[in-house]
Length: 95
Image 1 (cartoon, one colour):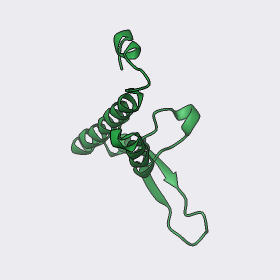
Image 2 (cartoon, helix red, strand yellow; image 1 turned 120 degrees about the vertical axis):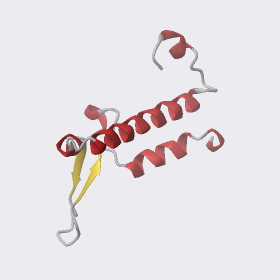
Image 3 (cartoon, one colour; image 1 turned 45 degrees about the vertical axis):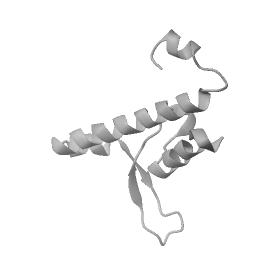
Image 4 (cartoon, one colour; image 1 turned 180 degrees about the vertical axis):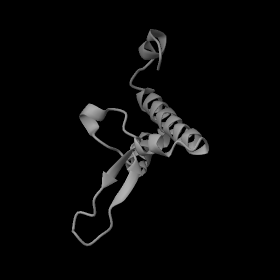
């Protein structure tokens, strides 16, 4: 939603659809950005888009994941699993 017309068209009936569309667009833009950076060999730039996920129990394996968050202040980091869960919850036939 980029302008007032789009914002004002949101109502109780289409809110879920608008949120799904926005989250999907956001996620695909991040993936496209990562793709472009990898193709260009800009690995340090890719790493700036990631977060660390420690094993937590001292025995597992630490992981690095692409951060898909859309609100760094409120949410912290979001991995692809969280994005998919939100997209599923916002699906039209899920409500």
